[in-house]
Amino acid sequence: MSNNVIRRLPRYLRKLDELSESGVDKISSRQLGELLGLTSSQVRQDFNCFGEFGQQGYGYNVAALRAQIAGIMGMERGFTAILVGVGNIGRALMENFCFADWGVKLAAAFDIKPALIGTEFNGVHIYGMDELESYLAEHDTDIAVLTVPKTAAIPVTERLTKSGIDAIWNFTNVELTEPNSSTIVENVHFSDSLLSLSYYVAERRDESAAKAAREEK
Amino acid sequence: MSNNVIRRLPRYLRKLDELSESGVDKISSRQLGELLGLTSSQVRQDFNCFGEFGQQGYGYNVAALRAQIAGIMGMERGFTAILVGVGNIGRALMENFCFADWGVKLAAAFDIKPALIGTEFNGVHIYGMDELESYLAEHDTDIAVLTVPKTAAIPVTERLTKSGIDAIWNFTNVELTEPNSSTIVENVHFSDSLLSLSYYVAERRDESAAKAAREEK
DNA sequence: TAGATTGTTAATCGATTAACAATC
DNA sequence: TAGATTGTTAATCGATTAACAATC
Image (cartoon, rainbow over the protein chains, first blue to last red):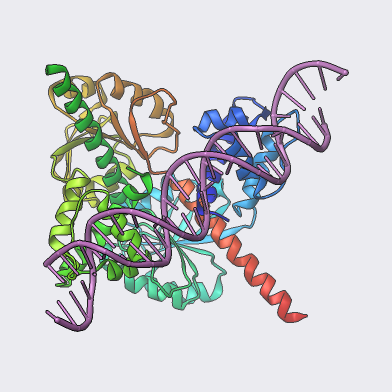
């Protein structure tokens, strides 16, 4: 399936949740497209990749479509995750990000700081880093959330993959994607995001300056 | 400029920084492409969007190319930012994310919690939310980092845009992009990222299961 | 039934890849 | 000079959009 489609599915999901909350229970591809800045054709093509979710002449049932997309994204599979590195970002995720809302169970966290080991954040137990391998040997784990400092990124990743972890949600600003690795890596690169924003701001400022120059003439 | 190209530029930049640190001072489009999983054609096309950065028969000078990309991304423009909402994510950004590395000056932060107002994080002063408008009236500000709780996202965004902010780095899980708005919004949607990862994990598990079933037959 | 909207095929558009002359 | 690699045009590929028959 095209990566572009995969990246749009979560947006549909969020918008459908929003519509549900507002009491909307049916929607057409045209309406949904307008809400997300997409054409109705694209919306229909996206859904048709996975089957027939709508009803001709009627549109899509919001709840049913939501459930279909949730299924496609793997939200009903009971995936479990561990978080490695309980620093600021790790803590922000543990305290403010609701993994369960997206079908993922955050089962444990790991850190090297003695003061943190044995404590809990939001009901999640924090183990010492030396317990990582033994924990993973005993608990089926699908995803590792990597929130360690930059310098620890590579060695910790090696320990994780050696213990059989094949999916990493990477919050370190280190490129983990290796050419021959079979590990699934999803990067949250804050710097890339900020730089993209910076580019568009720069472009906007140039346009304003050009416009001002034209008007002065 | 194509959005795809813009999203690749920060990756080139990070890789070039890495190469610089390792003492590499020239690189060909083929080598750079291999490091990032791109074809040499694509690398050359991307750079040619902005001018001629290389030298035939030689390749690209790492430092010069890095400087060119930094310029394109607006890193030399001295953009300033404020951060609104000093919760866990806000604090994680203030303490661990080096805005200066990407050419952005984080000049101030804002929160409603009286205990935080007047304190500093990493050298950045925290103002009360009621000082937001007066601060923005006095200080040229290019970017607002939005790290407030979900419920505050929309009202705070309105206050920001009314005060002339035209670029928002959005960490709330709320869709701010409005059809007719001229505000530049860059979203960091953790949930979208996790769901994409979840999709690829689900796909991988299905493949493994299919393979196991084939072998059993 | 008439109107609406899907599912799906065909047409268009844009992005990536291939190829190669220019040139260092 | 010979080899290497860019800059750039042309070819290919894939994604988006348009169109419309099917059908609720």
